[in-house]
Amino acid sequence: MGDVVIVGGGIVGTSLAMFLSSTNMKVTLLEKQSVASEATGLSAGTIYNAGIPKAPGSGAAEHVLHHLSTNIYANLHKTHDIEFTKCGCLQLANTEEELVLAKETYERESALMTNPSSSIHFLDTSEKVQKILPEASSSVLGAVYTPNSSQVNASLAAHAFAELASSNGATIVEKAQVKSINKKNNVYTVTTTDNNEFLAKIVVVAAGINCNDVLDDEYKINLFPVKGQMRMSGLSSDNTSFNSLPVIYWFESYNYWKQNNGQLTHDNYLKRLTHHAYGKRSPNGKLFFGGDRFAPQRNNDYDVSETIISDLFFNKIYTSIPELEPFFENEEAGAWSGIMPFACDGLPTIDVLDSDGLYIAAGFGANGIMLGPGASYLLSKWIKSGNKQIHLKKFERRN
Ligand SMILES: Cc1cc2nc3c(=O)[nH]c(=O)nc-3n(C[C@H](O)[C@H](O)[C@H](O)COP(=O)(O)OP(=O)(O)OC[C@H]3O[C@@H](n4cnc5c(N)ncnc54)[C@H](O)[C@@H]3O)c2cc1C
Image (cartoon, rainbow, N blue to C red):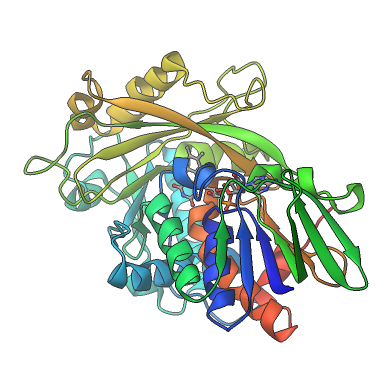
C-alpha cells in the first residue's frame, strides 16, 4: 500500500507529486491521458505577481500563491528549461474609468505587499506606459506595472515536475482513468477503468474539470467548464519589435466583472458581454494573445470561433498595440482553445473532503498556472504535518 494516490496529471497533480515524494512519501499519480494533456497543456502560462505579501491573514492568499509559484518555477528553470522568464506585466487601462480601477488596484495591492515600491507601480500616462512598452498606442491611458510577473511553458513545467517526482521514487501512470474511490478501514481503494486497484492512506483529487466524475455526491464541488481561446503568432519577434515584451493584461474585463459580479465574457448564446484579452512573448519569440472565455456548447468542445477571435484582435488588441497585427494576420498564425475548470466565485477548492484522507485541489479556473504550484506546496505541508496552512483557509469547500 502507498501513502498517497493523486488523481490527475496537470500542473496541480504533478507539482504535488514532486513535493510529496521529496518528503519520502510513497506517491502514485494516475492520469487518464498523458501529463499536461488538458487545461495545463492548453494554457497561456502567464503568472501575475504583485510582490512579497505581508504576514499571514492579511487577505493576500492568492498573492501568496502567486509569489510561491513564481519562486518554484524560477528554481525549476535552473535544472529544466521550462521557458520561464521574469518579464514583468502591464495591465493596460484604455478609458478614464479603467484608469480609476487601475489606481484602485494599485493602492489595494500595494497595501498588501511588504515592499511595494519595488514590485508594483501605477503609470498614469501613455508616455509612462510607452517607456516599458514602446509599441503601445496613445489609446492606452495608463497601466499597473508589476516587474516580478513572469511567464512559463506550463506543459514543460508539468513534465519537469513529473520527472522530478519519478526520480524521487513516485510512480506516474498515464492512460489510467480513475472510475471510483472507496474507503474501508481507513484505507482508500482507487479503481481505474481497467479495474486496476491502488491502495493508499491518502487520496488527492486534482482532476481539473473532471473532479466530480470520481467523487461521491456528498463530496462534489461547484465546478463548471469555461472555454478559453488563444492565438499563436506566425512570425517570431526575434530581432524586430517586442523583444522584451512584458505579459499584457487589459483592465476592461476586470472593470466589467467588478461591476457585474460575473466571470464570463460571453453569455450562453456566445453573445459578447465584454472583451477579455491578455498575451505574452515566449523566449523563442512566438507571441501568444487572446483570452476570450465562453460556455462550451457540448463536452469536449475545443472549436475555435474565428469570428470571435478576430473581433477581439481587431477591436481590442490591435487598437492598443497596432504593431502586433502582422504577427497574427499571416497564414502561419494558429489558434487553439481549452476548457478551464471554474467555480462561480473564481476561487479554487483546496480542502479535505471527509475530515480524514480524501483531499481535493481543483477549480483553478483561469489562474491555475500561477496558483497551482504554490497551492501544491502548501497542501503537501498540510498532508505531511496534519496542520492546515493558514493561506489555504480562503479555498475551503464552499457548497
Ligand atoms: C486557453 C487557456 C489559457 C490559460 N491561460 C492561463 C494563464 O495565462 N495563467 C494561468 O495561471 N492559468 C491559465 N489557464 C488556466 C490553467 O490552465 C488551469 O487553471 C490549470 O491548468 C488547471 O490545472 P489542473 O492541474 O487543476 O487541471 P488540468 O490541467 O486540467 O489537469 C487535470 C488532469 O486530470 C486528468 N483527469 C481527469 N479525470 C481523470 C480521471 N478520472 N482519472 C485520471 N485522470 C483524470 C486530466 O486528463 C488532466 O490531465 C488557461 C487555461 C486555458 C484553457
